[in-house]
Picture (tube, helix red, strand yellow):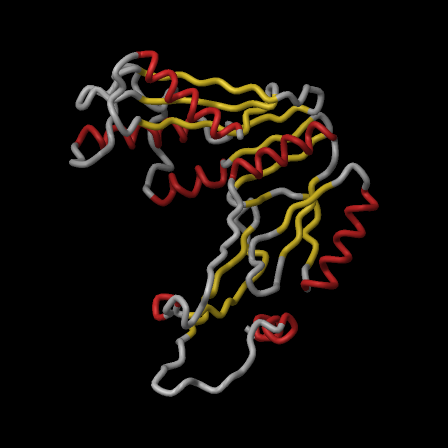
Length: 279
């Protein structure tokens, strides 16, 4: 908590002013969390002072809002590039207020990484965590011939949470003849489908994505549409995936909003969605 308050002072987060007549000060609350590594071991305790945002009024308490969010596709893209350029990815822990996501970085020149680390440590009171091994719930193994990413820790945690650590396994996540729809009125069959997915995760906890070093870096995208595949409303479903040659970095599956009048229309909708993701 003292470290948090010190960062407020160093970064000049606020300026003390008199409270306007008839206004109440916005309340604050301390939020505590444990920072864990890929093995689930606590490596740091953190405290954060947050404002009660729901009591704020736009134009009075704030003028604009900006919240940077790291997309998981961007992380996979960066790791794919790191494997292609053959450089090590490093990680730093941020203490500064409003910069609570860890930072990952790398370069083909180790000297630049060292200089960047020193600069960030001096400006934002950051600490080095060495080579990247765990980030946003994703485990990262950096090897000489490529990078492997997986989520076996997440799989273990979710199976334990719902009591599926000791169950029979399944080789596929769903039956090939199943036609799953959006669950509006959950039935027993819906529960069975979820259990089937858990049994599959139990059988394949260490599956992941392999980004090899010796592979080209050209972008390749695929798309497909299941015309009128939904039995209840005859809407189509679009699927797509994007590769950097053999490195899978992004994938999608979404049901169309409206009913397509033909297979051609359904395919055009799929192609448009895939193009948007590519851009």
